[in-house]
Each structure stands twice: as C-alpha cells, then as structure tokens.
Amino acid sequence: MWTKGDKQSPSFHYEIVSQSKDKSVLSDEVSYIQNEKKKFIKGYDTQSRSDVNAFVWRGKGLLKLLSSNWRVALRDEQNGQWAVICFSKTLFTPEGVDIISRETSLPKATWELIKVKMSTDPLLAKHLPQIKEL
Image (cartoon, rainbow, N blue to C red; front, side, top):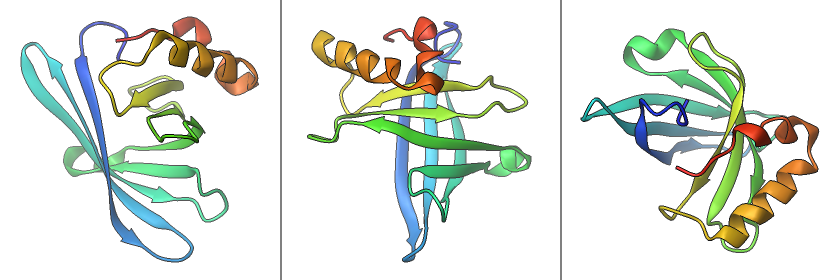
C-alpha cells in the first residue's frame, strides 16, 4: 500500500485506551499524504487473548465495517526502535507487512538485520521482494 507511490509519508500512532490483565485495546491512527493532502485511517486494535502479539483492527467512522487481523512478527528487542507487522488481506489491501520505526529512516545495517530475520520466517520471507525503504 505504501510502495505504490500514491500515498506518501506514512506515520503510525498507537495508544493504549484500555488495558486489563488478559487484553489491551489500542487507538490506531495512520496518517499519510495523498494528492498534497493529509489523510487518516483511524481505528481500534483489540489484542488477542491467545497471542499477545496479535490484534484485530476495526475501523472508526465509515471504516467501522472493515476489520483486519495483524500481529507484531518481529521487533527490536534491544531498543524498541523498529517492528515488523504483518496483516491479513482486506477488501482494500492485500496481505502484507509493514516495517515501522521510531526514526524517519533506519541505518543500512538495521535494514539488513531485519531482512535476515524476515528470511527465517516463511510468512515474512515471501514479502521480502516487495520490501523497500520509503
């Protein structure tokens, strides 16, 4: 979705809105630029009870009818600077992965480390040919 070129400068923002001992609910907002206008995709993520890394996204507003399953597949265990999230197909997006970072760009060595880690997981490895830095 982010590599087609019509959407630029994606930014992901997650915030815990409720938390119990068996699950959390996050507010989820993705902003991006399209046709020189800032746009948003807003929703809520409900954590799976059986997998703390898995969530179900449900849209807000007109997007309320849409949902998607996603999970944190890899993350920077040392500094929490990046994560690889994989998500299921929806009516509007194919199955895929996003590499998100707290920084605008990642060092080349970090990109290479992420690619090596992705290559060891068959679900993530199939997406390696589409991975590119924005």
